[in-house]
Length: 186
Ligand SMILES: CC(C)(COP(=O)(O)OP(=O)(O)OC[C@H]1O[C@@H](n2cnc3c(N)ncnc32)[C@H](O)[C@@H]1OP(=O)(O)O)[C@@H](O)C(=O)NCCC(=O)NCCS
Image 1 (spheres, protein in one colour):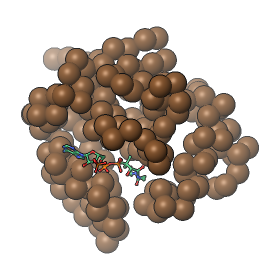
Image 2 (image 1 turned 45 degrees about the horizontal axis):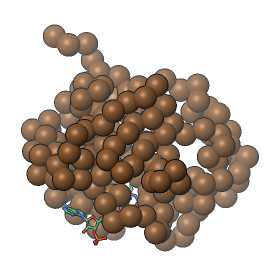
Image 3 (image 1 turned 90 degrees about the horizontal axis):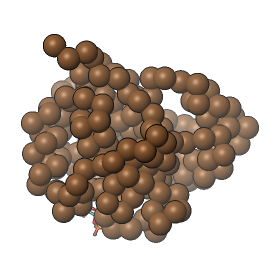
Image 4 (image 1 turned 120 degrees about the horizontal axis):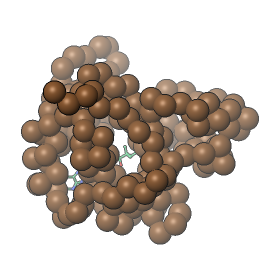
């Protein structure tokens, strides 16, 4: 049997038009601007509007070995964030997914496909799980179109799981957004 997959950081995960770059304490101001935007943060856990606290969170992250937090870049400009965390057997969780206004139209599809390409092809995961606020209807609809299945719900959240089959079917269906998977630079 294969050993249990682990989340690994990467200096860069390179897609078709986007690059994921490992987050650093220098990204504190950009991340804070996204996470304290009233509209974008509506369905996220609250972030204090405190640049030192954000920098300190990123310093802790730099030493962490169980998650990967990426700045999403387009044409050398940061346009968003995404994070892989919470390994459970062969499944990984992803979230902290935010794209700024003015993002290119393909950014949501390409960044989601890049997460799956990195996690499956490079890290060896065979499923994904995540939760989405019930009120965040556009986002859970996005995931359901990708084949996410609701496994549980609370008053506030839906919980989802994607099997490897669903992930690979969506990667094929939406291949025009990421025809060649991702390459990783360390
Ligand atoms: C979550 C988030 C990153 C998604 O990005 P988004 O750009 O809003 O995603 P959208 O659902 O609008 O999809 C973007 C485009 O891809 C298209 N698209 C979405 N799913 C598609 C599919 N299955 N096939 C083809 N196109 C698709 C959409 O139609 C849309 O195109 P349009 O701009 O021409 O309408 C963004 O909404 C965000 O930052 N939200 C705030 C933070 C948040 O709540 N994050 C989620 C919690 S983890």
